[in-house]
Every structure is written in C-alpha cells, then in structure tokens.
Image 1: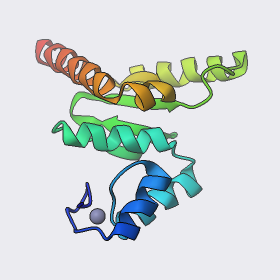
Image 2 (image 1 turned 180 degrees about the horizontal axis):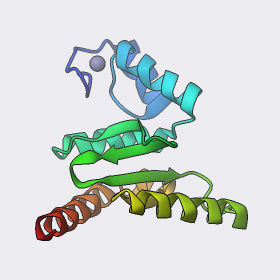
Image 3 (image 1 turned 135 degrees about the vertical axis):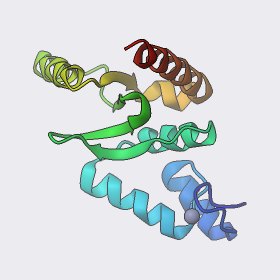
Image 4 (image 1 turned 90 degrees about the vertical axis):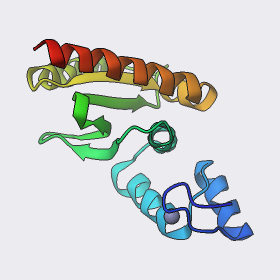
Length: 147
Ligand SMILES: [Zn+2]
C-alpha cells in the first residue's frame, strides 16, 4: 500500500482512514491536503477521485484551479479543458442552470471548453469517464493544431 501521490508507504491505519474518507490510497499529508480542499472549497470527493484517475492515465490535471473568476474543480490547461463535477444533478434549479450556462459561455470566450460530469458517473464509471475525457482531450488537441 503506497500513497497515490508521493508513493510513500502507508500504514494500515493511514490506508484505512484515507479509504474511509476518499476511497483513495493517500498518505496523511496528501489526505490532509484533500481534506482541506473539501473543507475550504467544497471540492466534491468525486472530483478528487477523478483527479487521481486522470493522473494515473498520464494526464497533468490541476485541482481547484482559479480561472480569474471562479475555482474550477479540475482544469487541464494544455488543452484548455475545464471539468466541473456536479453533485446535485437531480436537484438542479433553473437558476443554477443559467449560472452554469453563463460560466460555460465565459470560459468559451477565454478559449476554454467546460464539461460537467455528474458525480455518480465517477462513482460507478471512473474508468469510462477517464477514457472519454482522454478522447475529448485528443479532439481538443487536434482542434488547437488546426488553429
Ligand atoms: Zn502522499
């Protein structure tokens, strides 16, 4: 058992408390860092799981990236892709929906593509979600080349 982030050896207790909190193998230092994000920025647990899933696939994502206006759950700057993880997909109000659309519009104007992913997708289909994001990145990279 080693930390997903720094590869440090994990004790049974460290492993257990990280698995209980995040479902991820993290050392106390990295677990604390994630706990702090959850507390201060309300980062969804699934965003952190997706972050490590993308890292594992060789992507270089950034967690809680500040785009000048708001904090984006995950950003992949090389292809200007923002990923927001929705935790209350079923309970979306029209006010939230128009906010989301406006944010997406501002991002597009800055050359960024925003995709929104329901948290249940990460919970049940992490691998497929990562694979689809890899495909989106490929498409974006091809478009950047054309420009
Ligand atoms: Zn670590």
